[in-house]
Length: 321
Image 1 (cartoon, rainbow, N blue to C red):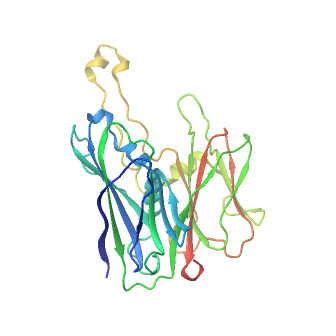
Image 2: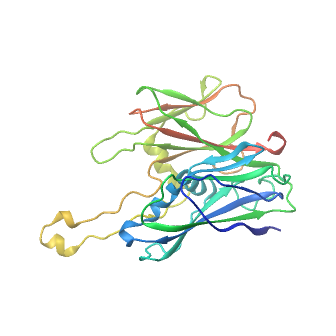
Image 3: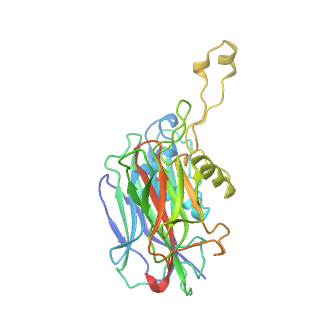
């Protein structure tokens, strides 16, 4: 049995603020965080792809310690890559004054509604949701409201839960560098984001290659390139919805030889994200066991010195929280 309830109902949001809300005390499968807003410009000025930036940070805190901590775009990526959840959005090509919405998943288990992988019961006030809003909202939206809905599993007896927090790294040189990974828990996946990806005139990537190192030795991934990391995400599902501005070639413009009139769609919304999977079949056979580890790192080979985000997806035993 599950209980689906509303925690926050159409609460108006103010740019730059960081409000908090108490979460339910029963075992939690996931939260659904929905942004509602009114469009104030024509569709060409208001793609869904810009909406995740409203969420500067989303955190779930247990007694002040982070269980979930990331920005809106990374939350969207983790929902798709880790939990196979993609929001369809409402009114994707709305006109001026159209009411629109987009939902983000905040998961506590990789398989939603799982009674064995969810967040265990808490006392009132111990588990809170905190959202930090973008400092300035975009000029083409208004009346931003928040809905938060919780899916509880009252009869569940969880054995483990999902923990995902972000490390922000900017290298000091264009050379290999290591990012510490958490030890003590199993790691199912690592979600990465890099500033630069290969483009038309530059074959460079902020995360060009990776290697996993456990106790000072190569482990599982001795080397993996940007291209295979990115393209292998297709084993999970098709590329996520475009959410940007899509236009088709204009035949009349082609007929008169005007190439400037041809608009091609941009890359999909996770073009800068990468996934390093361990528990590829979700059966625990290949999961990265870090509970017997003193030293665990991801080694990144960069082509530039720009920012990187690293999100380990830890599977935490309930007694270890």
